Image (cartoon, rainbow over all chains, first blue to last red; front, side, top):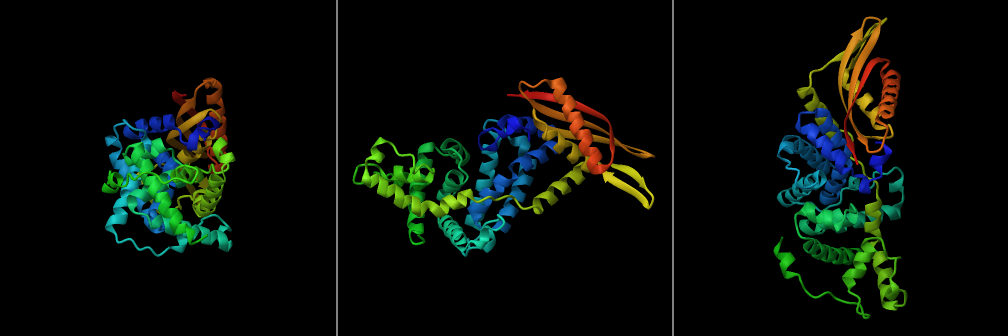
Length: 188
Length: 189
């Protein structure tokens, strides 16, 4: 995309999203497809870190994409599109975690997709430890960590996505980080 | 809000120097362990805690830095399926000595859209393509609707979009874009 759109924090361009949503709601398939392309990597990453399994993550993204198409008319525009979209993703992941019996064994394919990264045994072990630690968290704490500490969203944005006060988010993060450090202490 | 949120409001534990441990961990998690305030510059307790937590947090920092992109596959198939269900298929037809080459309007749409989106000053581009095919070769008429960045000369921007789209469509599909209509639908700040 052109330079002025790329310079926005986190690569997000809210004004462009709003414009695309208006087009998509008036029936433009093209607009909906561009919206999906703009956000698919991030919603996949959130799903992958939440459920820990690339196959389940891909299924969740597929469901979310379809849900966005059918529910776009119901998007009131009171919050940012990304807030609404990521909330749909997180809720779908939490439903998946709580309904399907979570198998905690680590899926190797959840590790790096970067070429060559998996040849580094130490790096692989480090990622395995981090993924196992995150998957060990209960869903509400996991969502907070995935959004803030992994996806690097602001406290304000993450709290809006989770629909909780920032103070509650901070509390969850404090607890989650203590648990994570305890889990990772054994690895280091 | 869960029950845990309400019942875990215990007072924060502190380092010997009085600095809340959760604040130090938060500093590490935010990747700011090396950004020490005046107290931390002179406090061995804070320095030791920062070093220890930074080491323990390293796997999570690596996980956050790991590049992950959505794999092609299910999502693309879903997009394709929905588009084919909702859109009427159109083809440009290019005669060939061994038969004919049919290029779906969809291919031209994506080509034109991606080319326009790369032009400096274009924030978002969409295309609704009408394709007509001449007997001696494919000819296409393309309409591009876009949102421009604020402050650009829109006439000059439209010229650059037309040039970029015509080149991309010709190079990728072999079709001649006889008419490229640029609709600047909005200007975004």
